[in-house]
Amino acid sequence: MGHGNDDPRGALVRPYAVTRGRTEPTQAIAIEAVLVTSPQGLREAQFSERDRRTIAMLCSDRPQSMAEIAAYLGMPLGVARVLVADMVTAGLLILHSTEITGDIGQRIEVLERVLVGLRRL
Image 1 (cartoon, rainbow, N blue to C red):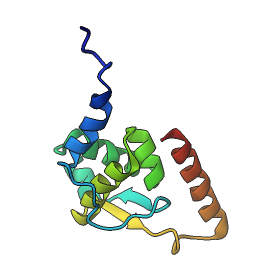
Image 2 (tube, rainbow, N blue to C red):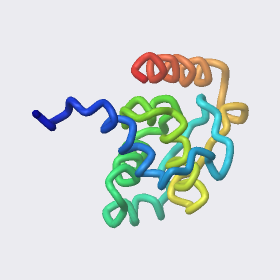
Image 3 (spheres, one colour):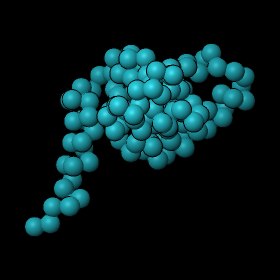
């Protein structure tokens, strides 16, 4: 029988392998929280495992919301959140709580991007 991509388990197994089976993030990260790659994260990205490198590169161009990162990676939000929380703990990503950031216009723009990210999940 064809192996290929017809195994429904493949899509679910890989993300959980990425987090080594952990489903609880090391810290709570809101879905609208905005993340940006730290200078250390940029330096270490090239030596990182694929998903971490992808996240580091994604958040280096412009800050990305948690929802956008999960959508871009094409993995469940919970799994992406574990990866991102690990990177924040390791100092590779800087977490910006949306409560602090800028004026209402900026916050609305971020939330609109969050909605787009959620629709892609």
